[in-house]
Image (tube, rainbow, N blue to C red):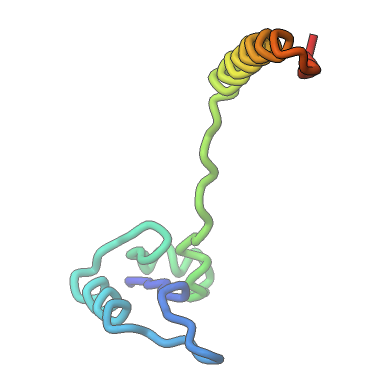
Length: 110
């Protein structure tokens, strides 16, 4: 059985949602060619449907949740250290110019 979750594929017009030709074409092509697409369509076996007690709720078979992006904490930490170093160097350079001009210096993080 092919499940298609086109719930997010519409154009909002006032109080009514409308399918555009593009949306309709995508639904028809997905159905006709039985294609699977993450968070949109999936073929499910009758055995799986039976195991789910014949529950045909689309969200049981197609998750619309997007996976969180993994963050490399070491790389992020190293990048922040480098940025902090650049800020200190730029502040010191800027303060040199301010001192020459007789103006008050920027505060430093030291």
